[in-house]
Image (cartoon, rainbow, N blue to C red; front, top):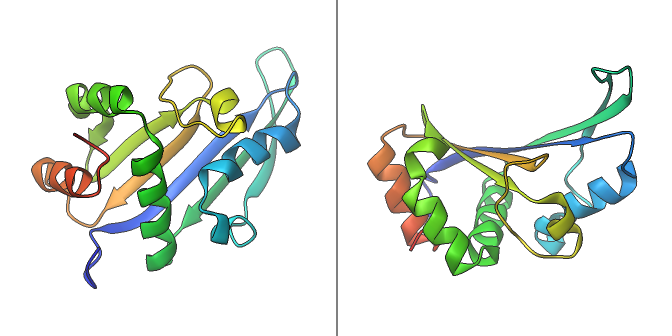
Length: 148
């Protein structure tokens, strides 16, 4: 990314349900982060109550520092399989809105150090671009290898 970075920030959000080990869920998220950021990214922890009064822990963070944003985006782009990149490319309209690219990754696979798209109980990424033109966002994604 140039000095005029096209990405403003990246939000990461994930739920740890009562049946899950919250530390393992956070560990899964940390495998997605570049090694140099694992100890620097701080997650806010919120305790929630689910539909059936079950405890849920909500973790969230916003990465704003330019180099950190670039490193996370590059790790996401390089970690996705060509099949997932193709899928994302084919469904790109469903993943974009008002300058944001939404990506959902499988918690279980992340824990095993693999990046895989999924929609059920995922790790949520919101990548906020400084420009909201979908074509420009797609071009940045292609430039970094997020899309084929």
